[in-house]
Image 1 (cartoon, rainbow, N blue to C red):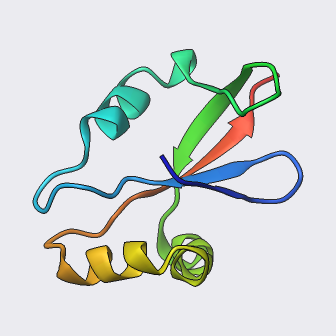
Image 2: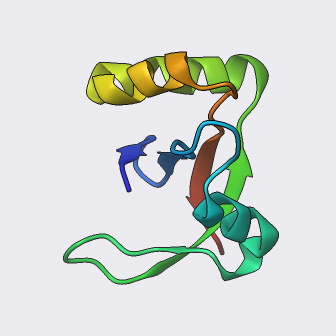
Length: 92
């Protein structure tokens, strides 16, 4: 799964994959957000709160995605749905 740093303490993930429905991992994440955590190489697991971005906030975040991962921009252009962009922030 590709992730993108969003400041010093948050990450963005894009629910790409599948033409007509969100991937299962996205449904699981949003169905049980209280169980979400991030595990990055060399770091401990961090409990996070996922939030799907919308409107201008999603647009700003999305602009960075194809710059870093052009294939996601191509996939999005062929998809029949808008890929959710999820912001993960550490849970206190």
